[in-house]
Length: 202
Image 1 (tube, rainbow, N blue to C red):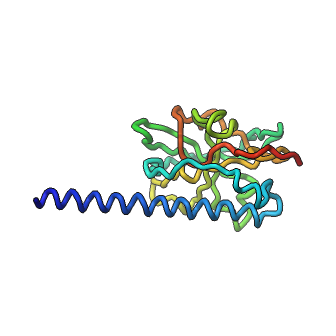
Image 2: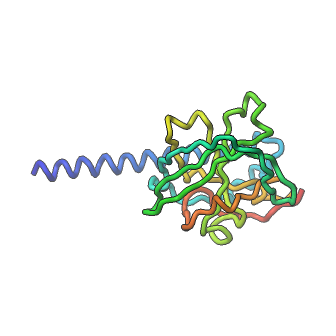
Image 3: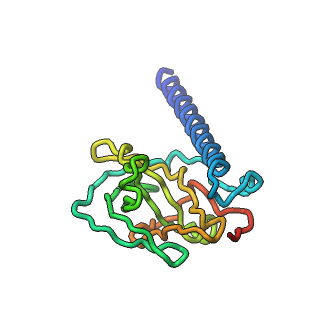
């Protein structure tokens, strides 16, 4: 009887945790949508937000990664979808387990933002996976991180917060192309899906 009660209590806690995670993820998505309405340069207006699509919240896609900082990294030009480029520095390599596989992604620091006091801690994590071109945007997706997110040699990656570049909604934007080293060898069904509306033109 005690074992059964312990199991039921654990199950209840797990269910409550899953519901709380889902609620937090939905709250993040609501804030994400509202941010389009406060950005004068955003490609979407309020009527377009109904065409945003997301995978169901999945707590297994929130993982802890080991951080290896990269010393003496030099700036390089990351191509953008409009044929130009932006300057970045390879900041750290993140190693983690997801869906039973070991993966590795590189996180970058924008040279243009490094001297801006507001964004000096900003880190950029662009990636591709096997859903691109089908369930998700062909050109991959992004995650935002901060140097402040890194505690010791670990950082939490929540792929439920993966989002599309502005280029997924409209042309006329300078969106970085995820480097080949950041290709995940699995279908990552978490985060934002392909935009369901028509692509816009600026």
